[in-house]
Length: 263
Image 1 (cartoon, rainbow, N blue to C red):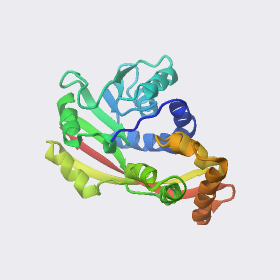
Image 2 (image 1 turned 60 degrees about the vertical axis):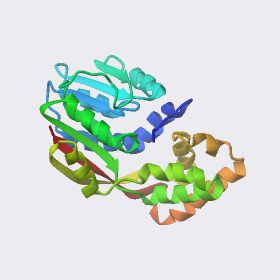
Image 3 (image 1 turned 30 degrees about the vertical axis):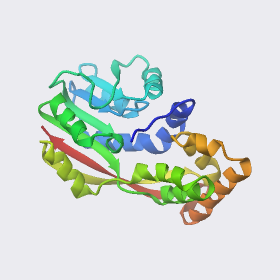
Image 4 (image 1 turned 180 degrees about the vertical axis):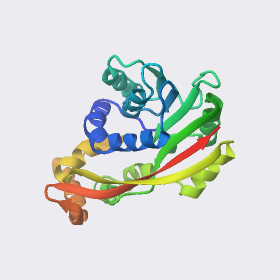
């Protein structure tokens, strides 16, 4: 499974989803990683680079931060947003970067692990790339939120069960103990899993759902619907989330598991 965006997807992802969702999860991951000045950091599945840029702010001018992603349009947006920041952007599969062993003090990945086609191989590659004593920290969804459950249900009704399954699979993630064991099996020590929960605050469904779907790999399927069908899908999501309306916003809990370990 991979997360591929094309067209305006990366732009919408950065302008809509990063401020409302992913920027907050990036901040939470960076805090958990406890980065230090002068450390060398690799951000895997960096997307448009929100975690990468935050990491650079922590390690300073004397530190090194590289962002790796297989999605060329996302990396192009990341380069644009980074401006003059000294960040190297690497277009590569997670398992075949060709980077030298022992290149990094810390490896990060926010919401990337679930999309790696060969997870054990990816973890083994992380171990190779870290210096002795180096740290790994990655976050992965802890199942579905009320919003994503409602969205996937409406997508199944108004687009197709197959498209809904594609969207739903992004949140079908291993439980904490299984994650911990998988990381330990690849040679990491001091492996731990910490659940992080945030209250997500987004616009109401009529505004948010079209923006969200436009930033997802299933964007084409939603945009191909007739206007009446799009509106019916949005209305169904709104009705299912009525209990989470606070004024003119949707406010609901969401959670990730953050996995940490050492080489």
